[in-house]
Length: 345
Image (cartoon, rainbow, N blue to C red; front, side):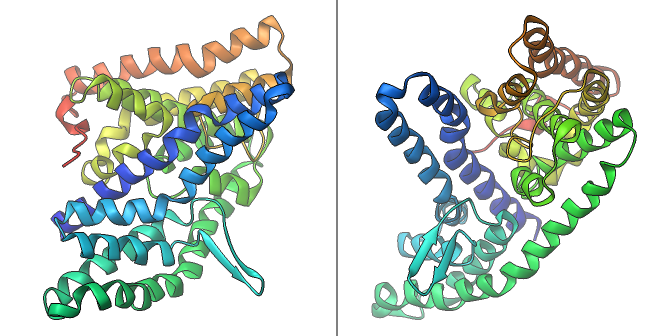
């Protein structure tokens, strides 16, 4: 069971990075450029739409990558991808057709992929000459439909987390900022969408700013902690999406200790310096510079705001994470670089 879950989580982690990084890197920058260069708006919007399209393909990519982890055949792997897409929640059916938007419910994507893997492995070679004909169809109509059935329940469960966070917004700003930042620093390492939670509860103001700093703490911290175990590009990818460490986090939760403490400090500072955001920026962190750009757009691009933004979103996350990673690795012997190894095979 541990090996099974490890493979599913590895496929999910890699799929999230592959699909979300393009938009995370350029999404907000392209939106800003569209306003600055209206004469090339059409070209820039094309690039933006392509990056958004990649995010909506997340379910099928996760399904395929999970299948690869289990060394399934090509037909089995593609069948898992199709089933995962069906149960993802990305596609909505109406009387006039269907629409595809968002990334779906990541937890349910993982559940559907796991069920689909078990299903195609159970079928194995039973279909013989009819494998190509029947396996894709059976996969979308059995594990795919099971995923569609579980989707509303899983989505409701995720929403309850948002409701719990919403109660924290009534607390004193420093305490609120600290707790929200810690929670979001953990959510970004889980299958739960930080952006989805933020928009469900419409978190705003200091709460949204603290959420961004919590995500930033995890992204920067995981990038630093994983540098010696991975290549530079893989380490840098953590800033765009710390979910690349999802498998390692579930196997060894203690690897998040340095980033949680960093998030707590940054969240408290968010309450002191009034770092703000809105429901649609919260949960992005430093990815695409969404967090700092939204803060600056709210507070205006004054020299003091720019300085605070650089300190809060870049300088302090680096300094604090370096300190606590060193503390937990060398003094307390809690973690080691190998704990952050990202496996592609």
